[in-house]
Structure formats: structure tokens, C-alpha cells
Image 1: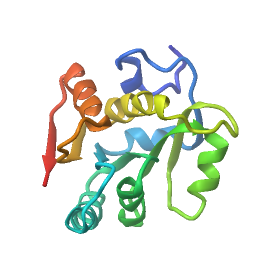
Image 2: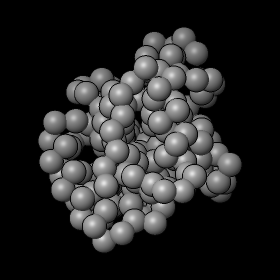
Image 3: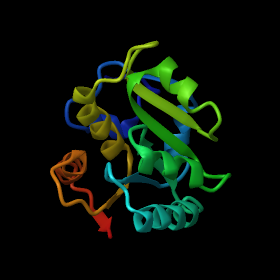
Length: 167
């Protein structure tokens, strides 16, 4: 992809998305440094508490990027600072994402999928690829099991980025 508005970070990503559907302003991605925050599928109370703390404090300095996937990532979306630039990546249709995030302060919604397409778990790694590519840094929760978080680490390492996990 070579269109002027296509995000520069995605041009360098693993298999750049051929088409992006979005709502919001793509310039939100370049207005400040971005931090991709992803958490595991079964968050403990302790993890949810840490998400509250991290999302509130880090969103004052970074634009926050997350994937519309699970309870923990949804908590990230609701706890970011009101002035933060929140970018949400989906693995379902962009219009379906817009419906699910209508009550949140989202600067940008991105998806490779049009309209009302249902989300499919096999599309999750592709959404994680986008989120990992757009973040300047990656913050993930610790996970014991095989999960999409390992995919996020792999994409970040592919792009020679640093990541950090929290317990």
C-alpha cells in the first residue's frame, strides 16, 4: 500500500493490510507516541486493578492501542484518560465495531473487515499484527498459556520493537 494517508507503521508490518476500514482520524496515530496494551483472556481481579492503574497513567503520555477482544482489553478502553488518543483494532466488520464502542471515547477504529462482518477467532492474529505494528511500545499481561499475546510479542520482535509484560 502506498496511499499518502496509509499509516507509515503499517507499511513496514508483516504482510501489510491491503485494505483498511476506519472511523476517526488516521492522524491520531502520529500525534504522539503510541503504546499497545493487550491483556490475557482470563483476567484476575489483580490484573484488572493493574489495568486501571496503567491505562489511566500511561494514557496521559501515550496514545493507547488495543484490540476489541476480551474483558481485560475492554477495561483498557474504558479506563484511558479522557484526553488520550484511543485506537481500537477489530477483527470483525468496522460497522459492528462502531456499534460496540459507541459509548467510548475512541479516536480511531481500524479493521481489515467491512460492514457487519461477524468476528472470527482466526482473524484475531491479524488484528494483533496491526496493533503491534502501530504501537511504538508493547505492554502485555503475563500469561501462562498459549495465547494471542505470544503472537503480539512475535510481531513486535519482527519489527525490532521492545515489549514489557506485567504480572
